[in-house]
Image (cartoon, rainbow, N blue to C red):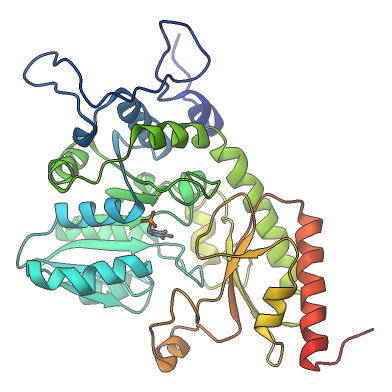
Amino acid sequence: MTKRKAGLNTICTHVGEVRDTQFRGAVSPLYMSTSYAYENVDIKRYPRYFNTPNQEALCRKIAALEHTEAGLIFGSGMAAVSTSLLAFLNQGDHVVLSQQSYGGTHSLIKEEFGKYGIDYTFVEGTGVDDFEAAIRPETKVLHLETPSNPLLLVTDLEAVAKLAKSRGLVTLIDNTFASPVNQNPADFGIDVIIHSATKYMGGHSDICAGAVAASAEHINRIFQLAKNLGGSLSDQTVWMLERSLKTLGLRVRAQNENALQLARHLREHPDMAAVWYPGLEDHPGHAIARAQMHGFGGMMSFELADGIALDHFVNSLEWVKPSMSLAGVESTLTIPTLTSHALLSEADRERAGIRPNLIRFSTGIEEFEDLRADLDQAIEKAKRHSGVPTEN
Ligand SMILES: *Cc1c(COP(=O)(O)O)cnc(C)c1O
């Protein structure tokens, strides 16, 4: 009998379990030991070697979710980003990144890379031509983020992977916003897939972790640096992350569905200046997103019409909370001009399309009708407060 390839929710539920052979319990036992009798000189189990029973099992689940040979888990998303970038870059090398990269990645590069003698270029556009134009003879790595923060701009994964292969470059992607449910970059030839597991993988706003998925060879290269840098995850959190991942497919598909309905509703709303969601036909990345994503994700941005007081809108929301983070089962929002993009000049923000009334929205699993009603009533209250004429 040939073995059927497991589907998403089956992988989420079963792959990478630690079998409880002693008591035959339903869930993975948690092994908290930091000391293990060594089996031989080659296998020494130790948390910072990323090979405790719970870590090894969770790495199998991450790899299965991203369709790669191997995986590695870290103490934070930034530990995963920094270790992966530095694993493939040496003194004198150059890396090309998207200007739309996560704020912490920007800080890492701008504040730290100078002292390692690693040069970098942030490219403004999200097209493969933009990346190609920035490649130099010393370039070793292309780092992507798609869909991007906060406008959900989309880069063609297959085109970038092809370009990188022709130039002998390693491709890294921060796949946090899509999650493995909506996008599997390895299927398009991207080498190293990075997640802030603090976001969709954790999904309940109570875990800080990072994950990387890649070929066994690439994971081994990242591991060689990781064991020296020491960014491993505590086994308690590993266990919680395994538990969270069991519902990843259920959660993210519900978030996709809510986000698509909400984007369509806001798109028709007279008080919206713009709605950015890759699932909308008029989003600039829609065609590519359709081709390379399984779902369009839970993240979107929208811009209130001029004259509507943003702070009053945010304070009038009953279910939706302002939050720095994202991707939990609860809907949250942030104001990019006040948070993630506060340090940019107004001119730079304007150029990037980040206007003062822009809101980045992380869609939760609440009932769509409740979310719609909450946003609508907050818009009405903010309009009344701002002296904008209302219908009633
Ligand atoms: C949050 C986030 C990170 C960093 O993850 P931490 O777990 O906070 O270290 C990296 N990339 C993206 C896209 C993120 O949203």
